Amino acid sequence: MAIFLSGVKPTGIPTLGNYIGALRNFVKFQNEHKDDLFVFFVADLHAITTPQDPKELKQNIRNLVGLYLACGLNPDNMILFIQSEVSEHSEMGYVLQSVTYMGELERMTQYKDKAQKQTEGIASALFTYPVLMAADILLYDAEYVPVGDDQKQHLELTRDIAIRFNNRYGETFVVPEPLIAKTGSRIMDLQNPNKKMDKSADNNKGCIFLLEPLDSIRKKIKSAVTDSESIVRYDVENKPGISNLMTIYSSLTNLTYQEIEEKYRGIGYGQFKGDLAEIVVDEIAKIQNKFNEIINSPLLDQLLDEGRQKASQIARKKLCEVYKKVGLGRF
Ligand code: AMP
Ligand code: TRP
Image 1 (cartoon, rainbow, N blue to C red):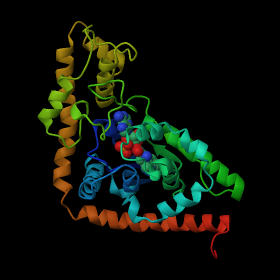
Image 2: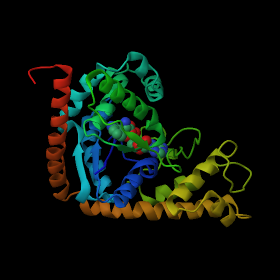
Image 3: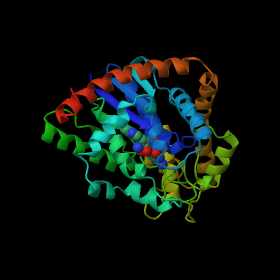
């Protein structure tokens, strides 16, 4: 049985980028691998590496759990939990800091980007964040980690940490593989197609949220930045705006770029954007309906309680093994 694992930070409401780059793939893999185990969690400890309002954070955690299920994750072969409820993540993170080098963390591009945006001092947790992420993964012997393109560097570091630990203390961790989709692993901002769509961005006009009113989604797609050529053609370098919209189109319909180009040959951007708006709205409306059905159901807490228990069991065992190998305590 293979183990697939991934997490999403509960900072704000998940975006269409999170859906196409991550959530939707979780569901796809789960459907394709019914005999394997899927470990999904809400990465709330990662959320506080940048300032969060406590009330909003609480709400975002609940909404994210609801969205995981509304997007189609199946409780049958899944362990679903909240990261902070399984204390082994922090404990393992600390041990792994002892085999991670400052220079490795200084090279992380996400840290550099985020640190630049901080006005009130940079939390040291933002710096050590990739080590906690390595702990999240290595605790469960995960073989596959489905993520968007922006997590690739963190996954490479996780592999390096696992290999280094294994070399130093003997075979302990499974070295995980990232699963990054060919199309849609980096959805860009609709107003600035050179920047990734990000739920924590300052300007929301280029970002589609999964719980946003459908009319507002239509408007954002129709006012997405394109170019003056008026030809639907995939060319990231010269036509980043239209190429990004084509990526969204292709991801949600499974049409290839070529098929989309043919379909809209001789037809302007207006029709293309109108069609895309309806495709996106159809998909998100389904998620919202399901979300509204389940968000107040006791099923959520039931699943989270069960998830916490199962995750803790696996994580405790791994942590004890690590303490023992490192020579800590009286193990
Ligand atoms: P985060 O919201 O940063 O916790 O990201 C959760 C997951 O969504 C990770 O696997 C990210 O790589 C993925 N993701 C975030 N933003 C995007 C985006 N704009 N396009 C594709 N995937 C994304
Ligand atoms: N760091 C990831 C992000 O920002 C979220 C995350 C935390 C994660 N721990 C993980 C993803 C472990 C995959 C595996 O998107």
